[in-house]
Image (tube, rainbow, N blue to C red; front, side, top):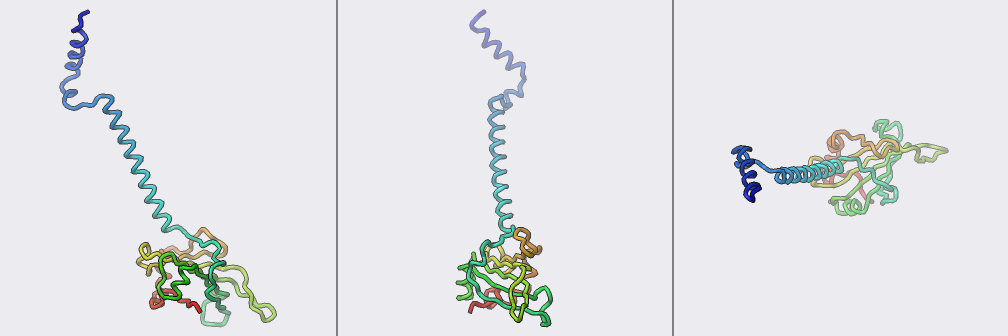
Amino acid sequence: MCLEEPRILQQRTELERGPSVKRGAMDTKEITFWLKLSRRNIRILLVFALISVGMAWAADSAQYPDNFRRWVHVGTGVILPGGVFPENEQGMHHIFANQKAVDGYVSGNFPDGAVIVYELREAQQKNGVIIEGERRRVDVMIKDASLYKSTGGWKFERFMGNQQLQDAVHDSGSSCFQCHINAKAHGFVFSQNR
């Protein structure tokens, strides 16, 4: 066997593959490189997609405020039967605010991160005394001007009874805002800090 034989065999094999091989067809290493690169790009795209979905879900997911009864108590009102309010509004109404909301009550300008909780409980009368009964619902207002532009910068949520995961507001708060627009002069908030 001559030293020239392997080189000649290699050239003959390349010629047998045909001209398409010489015009840019990829060898196994190149194919593997592009497959790895494509897989990497797909993984990166998947990560970005999951992050985007997570951010959208976080913005729209229910945000029940834990321990809101330890916040600043803004006030309480009682609506008894026989008045102008519908039955579903009757009861003891407590309003709580986190510190950012308290600052907003003072200035009339509620900053992002302000949270106001409106807790409605049954009002029970015993021996001439009105006491709070079972929780009927919790309404929550969360301020984020960049996320909730169509509702005055507020996200509105409602949790029925002791439910903490299922938001009963299904229209992104637009039905709540239709009423709150009447309180525009005070940052779309009806309650006042005394």
